[in-house]
Image 1: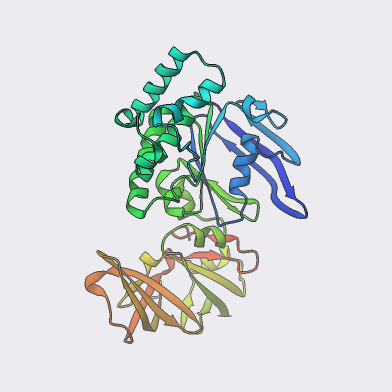
Image 2: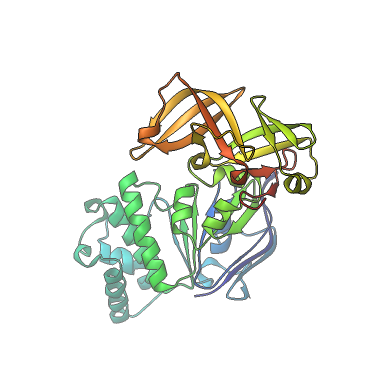
Length: 365
């Protein structure tokens, strides 16, 4: 096991800057998830760390050792790919052992390590099977076993669940998390799925356009997003964002549909800005509004309802914008009807609409 450090790392492909001066510390034994939209640079970071690409500038350290100029085989990292990359003509045992055979590990030790690793991943009964005889989840475990059998100091995983169906994805992500906690192996996991990131990580690093937007424990990033991008990317459904314009003093007009009166201390913290972006989680929007001064209340038309079982998403039309509420199934208004909706001031994240940075987090006014 080892810590991993990126220090002012940059990478270009032609004229395109893919990694822009990234610095990131990953602790020994930590499960770090890199999450972001396609093209944000998360897979490139893994390729740089594994040695498949070289940085244009900056330092890469594994266990305190700068490995930027080391060959991939000299870094003692293992990587699990999206497509598993199993040899189709080899059975499970040979797939797990093949890398050790290439490195000249003695046969008896190879056999011992292969069986030990297969046992940890529940593959004992499948050692004689070919990849085509396995389910997607079993193939994923074989790919992990092949990576773990070499006793790496760091495990890299590049969207390993994207080929699985929804139910199997939930099952396998739980298996990966339990295994990582048991082995305490430094793991860097790449995904575009924020649900995977939230459910699996010790910490998440949110990336956009080759930069790190925010790093922290999943719930901290969810509850205290540093900017609008993180606020909208982390959390399902995404955060509602509404525009507010100051009318006078501490009174703001929200989406030209409702007034919002700020307490003087909160208005002072916001610096008397003429414009604000208000972020509200769907679960904080209440149907059958509250008319108190500590709330913002609208009359809105129901555009669409999405039943999800125990909960329902209700989409409202709000001026030129929209608002989504998450509510219990018994409280759902009918499509096309009008309803009163509200949210408390204490449930609002206040953002600067120009810089997109968070000014005041919900509950901290």
